Amino acid sequence: MATTNGKGLKDFLEIPYDELETRNLKAKERQEKLSPQALQKEYVAYLQKEKRIKAVTLCFTDIEGRLHMLDYDKKFLLDSLQNLTFDGSSIRGFTPQHESDLRLEVDWGSARFMPADIFGPGKVIFFASVLNRDRTPYHSDFRGMLKAHTLALAKKEGLDAYAAPEIEGFLVDGVNSEQQFEVTKGFTLISSGGYYHSLPQDKLRIFIDTCAEAQRAMGFKNEKDHPEVAPSQFEMNFSYAPVVRAADNVQLYKLICRQVARNMGLTATFLPKPFTGINGSGMHTNFSLSKKGPAGQAKNIFHDPKGQDGLSKIAWDMISRLLNHAPEICLVLNSSVNSYRRLDPHFEAPNQIKVSPIDRGSMIRIPVGNERTARIELRSVAPDANPYLVLYTMLRVGLEGQKLKKDESKRERLRFLPDNIQDAIALMKSSKFMDAVLGEESKQKFIQYKQAAADRSPRALGATIKRTEIIYHHEVTNQLLWNSF
Image (cartoon, rainbow, N blue to C red):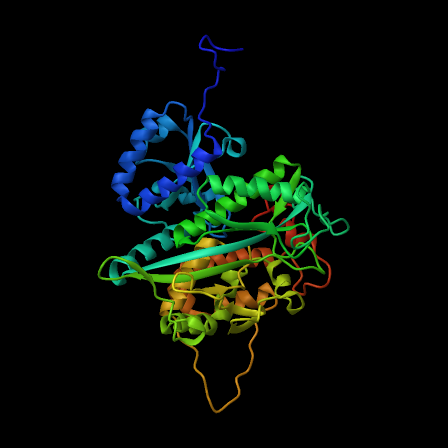
């Protein structure tokens, strides 16, 4: 039934993809130029004026890395900006029941306009900081910790951190295939092709094209989109960004992939190793630091044309600290039972605690770079890791940790990352340095949830993927599955 003006009963905002990309890239530029107060004033005025927006989606991430979304009625949100509360006891790793209320504070610089065919019409999305009842930062909000730390680095030392994660995943048959996983059945691949082999109208290619179009529209600035080495595996690379925005991109990337797959009757899974016998999925994290000179021009301080492999001393110092602390941060980088299957040397696994410009079995690789692109690539990150926690840990460890001590009189012994989550938990638990990085309470809470998942699976991974390592995974589980243990 149509209204008298010829429109349907619902007239909600739907923006064409080309206009979406323009809007989102302009929003990113304004984030870099305007103060938080100016951005709030601008977006509040926009929301008041735009009658076709029905709801504002606020996003935050729990301690394990799972994305949560709350839709607020637009008018309610604008009237209640100082009192946006939610039940923290319902979020794994947040507050206990007897002190459940937490607050959300809109990060106005994180605005994204969304493709209506994926997210629904009439919505705009923002990320939010999690606050205590007294409006102080909540200690287990790693996005808030990362943002505060980067602001402090920029103010005190003039440093800006950038990242470009490369996120791999698998497309498998059926909806909710992770929740329905069984040892005897497992997952069903939807493509038997591999690198570059998928036909233009294969399900995998259609999925990749649809996701990449949405990512470009949301301002990701995609660089290349393709099937990966393993059959049914995908990867869509996007441009580097300041670390908080880069981590936001990771969360939105996975959200887009999951929704597009569901629309196709499929599942996009970011389990690190959903199949034995073929390559697993990683989240290779490209990272660099820049510093503004006297003229205000940012310079990539990882670049040194005369340095070893084109890297500066500060880059090599960061590599040394990351390698030195690799065992105790492994749980941050590989935070699920299943992720330790990926650290298998037979499948280009980055399980060797070393750095190399060519060896893809190394934990850290040095890609070919120039003045603009010089960087390090931390390859041992799993795609199910909390991206805010990963980047925060990289920054803290890389700049504050202890460098490797080399005894030139002895031959260096090759070290390896833990091959199971129980060992990784023990190494992190005994680390005083990680107490200082994460705070003792957040560290213990993180370990507690990792231990709960570990206790539901055998210590020895074996040759068969177990039902328990899938259904109790932090990105898969729901209350019903946890209670069935």
